[in-house]
Length: 131
Image 1 (tube, one colour):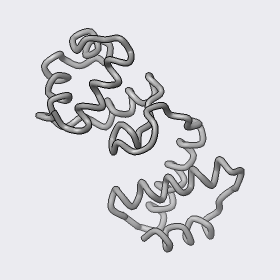
Image 2 (cartoon, helix red, strand yellow):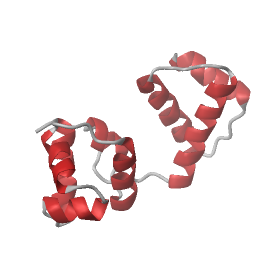
Image 3 (cartoon, one colour):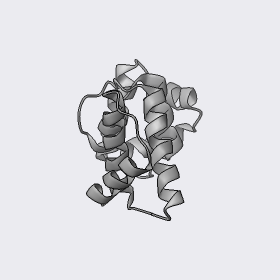
Image 4 (spheres, one colour):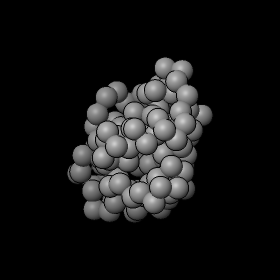
């Protein structure tokens, strides 16, 4: 069982599901879901997103095993951070590796929850710092 597979099993068990009912709840076949838990098949981003949103799971915990299982994120601010970073990267023709982009989004999100607003100048500084 892969690390993400172990964490999927933890979420499933925490919610009181066996594998087959959880697979049906998520709209995937039981064989696909079993393969996700075993680590025999990569978990689609759309499924990770749904689990995080529907069950209040932290994406950092589910994907990386970092932090707490429960998410205390504000969905609107997360969405704003992702959109701001994506728009800026596209506008400036930047394509940072996924891990770096995730760090930028995390930094922007943390700044947003502290009440700070962003413009292009601030995003450029963040990109230059993280990249």
